[in-house]
Length: 282
Length: 282
Image 1 (spheres, rainbow over the protein chains, first blue to last red):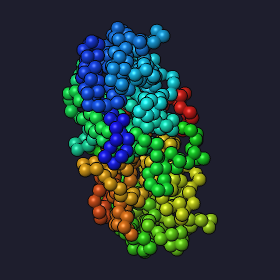
Image 2: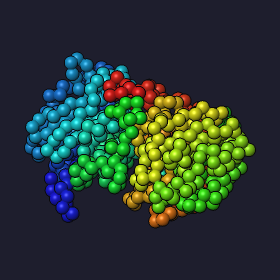
Image 3: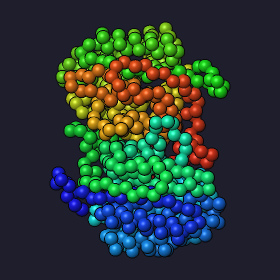
Image 4: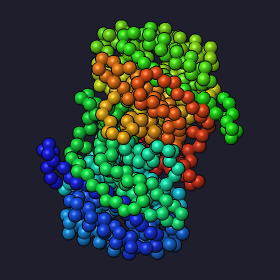
């Protein structure tokens, strides 16, 4: 934590767009570790990495995914924990996990003390349904030395119920690990998936850090929407929207996310009409 | 309803950006009626108008608002009902309502048969809290000859719980009447309030029609975000983003909103993890 010109305490946050290749875990781990090193060098205290960093995404099927999976104390997470300790970082990233005999599309948070949380993606996209067992627990919000960090993977972000639960649980920043498959975008428009991140931020007055991947894989290309969104819903960095690795950083006064006011008389959480919603707590 | 080149049945929808002036109900009604006539002339079957069309927005206080309010069978709604009958239109617009001795920030739907629904804004912005009694009922979704139309006013749209309730109730299109006060927008960015409309649409695979106002009033300027968003979250028309009246139209195959699929194996409503949300129905 450092101090900005205006006296606010700021934390440098990094989001890493990493080129991944399905079936090449050693190269993928090296690419992610290079991004972590770059972020640490730039002074970041939190680094967010994409989804399924070790394995890549476009599996031929469950068998290939299984051959690439590893436990939460496997080489990928172990290396991240080592780097987190070496650089006093929080690292949040996705990995293909083998846990209890099933495959999970998982996301881990490590800091200098080790593993803080493992989250399993609850909303599965497309053929992930042939490979992964969906998560059965809410997205964690972890109290760390730099602030409260929420976790979520890719398609999860498209469910406002899920996003709201993280907001209401008090996240200062939501770390989203993703592999966003590209779909047609009208000329002049920003990919709508980035707008999901913007509204997740604005509707909950929290920061949102999205790490997307790059490098087309078996005919699938990516949004490359790596971005860091402020609590007002506007980007502080990114979206990248171009192919190739990128480590974006921005200095965030995470305490801003503790104030949910949008004006002198309004507050995005307090103004909820919980008396009228079918369920007050979502 | 007409038929598009590809054979789909399409309905022409209009969103009207209307210049309003606080305290000039006759001029405001005339401006709205001119917009309705323009939309009808253009072949629209649904016309969405802004919030508080009769009264304007920036009241000096409750007394001024009270002097401008009218019942749901007052001159504003009566005129709209007459125009709806004359042109076989559905009209959705906002008005300053006196009902049961209190003021409401209301929205009415009229069609050729008369008044179909009156909705009272449930989430009040800023000094509206000094003037209006907030609504205490969910946003309606009304089955009309052109499709199922949901209703909502301005700040309501910023609450994903409220938007989801309309989506789950089966709205094909959400009609949003608004007076969006302008706030600073970073260079090159679209106002984030428009992104709320985009994500309301995308997250529920429904159309969203936003009618904003124009004409600065007592020092308050407006987003002028009048727009029509398709179920994929991208604009079909607008946002206007410039001062001055505008009637935008787009031909919408409203039946597209009955299909919530986002891919061969995904569906924005069916994929909800209601087993994990604190409340399955929001």
